Length: 328
Image 1 (spheres, one colour):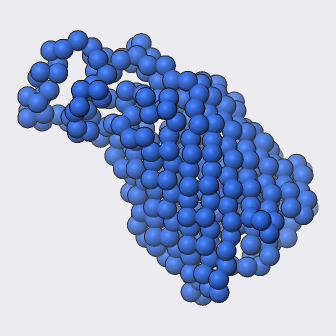
Image 2 (cartoon, rainbow, N blue to C red; image 1 turned 180 degrees about the horizontal axis):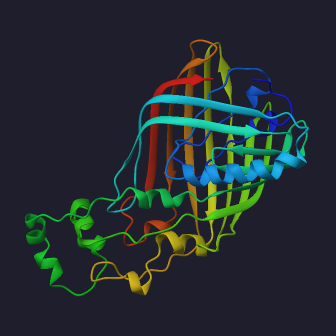
Image 3 (tube, one colour; image 1 turned 120 degrees about the horizontal axis):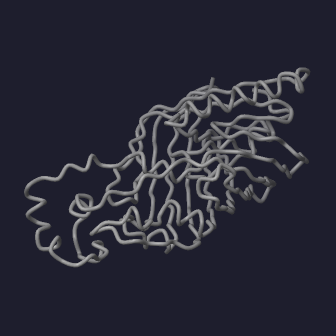
C-alpha cells in the first residue's frame, strides 16, 4: 500500500485505549516502506455503531472531498489470545481472530471505529481531531450468567446473616464473590478529542485528550504512550509503555456503585480520578509480502480508585495474542 498523503496520519495511530482488545499499531515504519507489525483490534459488538459512523463519514465527505484519493485497508489475524476481565463476575475474553479495517482520505479517516480529521501534518508531527467509542464498557459485556449452586448458597449462609459489608474483605474466593455480586450495567460513551503524534530515530510518541460528548459519563481521559520500533532482518520488535489519567466522573461511572444499584453485598461506592500504567511488547516475523507471524502481550495496572470498587476483583489487566497475520 502506498504510504503517501493520509496514510502517514494513519501510520501514527499507536492507540492504547480499552475500547478494543488490541488496537492497531500501524507504525511509522510503514511510511519508510519498512515491514512493521500491525496489531489489529477485533470487530466486537461495536461493529454496527462503527458501520453507522462510517456511513455518516462517507456522506459528509462525498461532496467536500470528491477530488481526494481514497484508500481502504483490510487485514486479518487468526490465532488465539485472551484478555483478563478485572470484574468479580466477569469472564476472561477469548481472542480467536482480529480484524483491522480502515479508510482514509487526505484529511478524513476511519480507523477501526475511530473517526478523525487531520488538522496538521508535518514531517515528524501530526495533529488529529478524533472521535471514538469508550473502551471500559467492553468488560461489562463478558459477565458470568449468575447461576448459583446449592453448595454455594450453603457456603454463603454465614455471610448472608451479617450486616452489609464489602464482601471482598470477607476473604471469599472469586467464584463465591461472583455468586453474591452482580456488576452494574454500563453503556458505551462516544468521546471526542485531540491526538498528537510524533516520531523520529528516538521512537514514537502519542498523546490524546478525550471528553465524553454523548452525556454518558461526562468525564475526561488523558493518555500518553511511548514506544520504539526495532527491525532486525525479517523480525520486528516493538516495546512500548503508557500512562493514562481518568477523571473522577469517568471512573465513577464505570466503577462506582449508585445507591439504587447497591445491595446487601454491593455497598455504595464513589470512585475518584486515577492513573493507569501499561507496558506492551509486540513481536512479528515476516514470512512473505502478505503473511506474518505475530505475537503481543500487554499488562495494565489499574488505578487505586478503580481497584477499590466493590465489584472489581483484579488490580490489573493482562492481554496476549499469537497467530498468523495476513495483509491484503
